Image: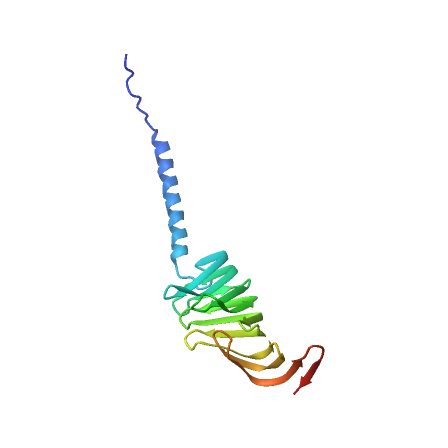
Length: 195
């Protein structure tokens, strides 16, 4: 004998409660989507932890950015990426050799201007082993220059130079201190100051 199919009937009260719950849930989701899609200048639209970003030109890696925390702000006037917990940047030659390395405890990249700003214990090294120390450094990708108006310290194989203001090419291979203040020659055993 074949059993007839069972028919389930819901009481009207149960149907009203289920309908009311589904409306509340969909309204809540709509509000969250609206907040997420709405333009809010103060909130990052993308947040990434332990990120590694590669920039390429003609299929070759030119820049590698490593950061413990990356925040992207998508505003109409000035979209920018913030690296609030520090940054390490490597630039590469066409033969994929490291040309320069930069570290800083804070950095910002302004997308429309093509401008990087690194601050708080900025250290930059070039392929010759020369090291730049400063508190604030800019990299203008449009003009292809690196610069600061702050105090700088440059350590080379010959000595240590101090000054105010600095300009360089992107690889830190050709640089100049705008207002040199002192230079310390380093020999095998002695350090002699020159002003």
